[in-house]
Image (cartoon, rainbow, N blue to C red; front, side, top):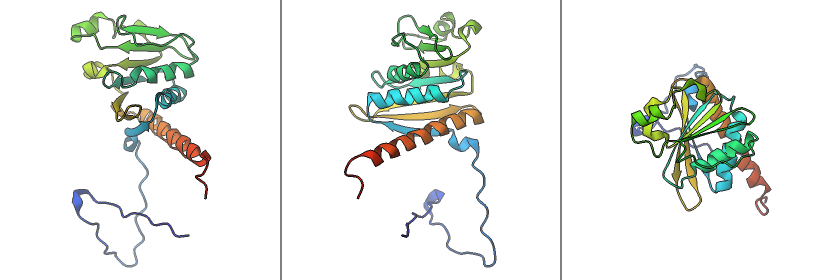
Length: 209
């Protein structure tokens, strides 16, 4: 069986050259640089899938990452954090700390959950104690992080959640700052997500011919 492979597109819209030089071996493919995985886009089709993504984030985390969440009201930011908490073994219900600004949870490692929706300016951020060393260590998750993105110490992972339908969401994971470890972190998340969906597709009745 012969598989057809689509041609590689070149930047600028020009078709790649078909001329070849005789008696020359093709250049070896360069190793993949960690920065090639500094951005990953995944699609969730339900709140359950968003929680599953959050759970896998926690399973892949080492406990010192910062996850900066952004997206409109109802996008699923808290839903993602609930999945994180479930995987960390946190039994307390997780809700958005809109009025108290921050909540701490004990699990496999500590989880600090921030909500910056009500913060008006940088002085509010300073007064709430975000930079206080006693807040850490542990996994830090920030809702409405886009309000003060430049105040978050790099490197960190920014997660932009965009509603694409009633239940579907597009999640864009991007490493801010140089970090091969965080690049591997989101690459491993992407690999798990693809394998999960491939397995689900293979198990659907009627798909096999």
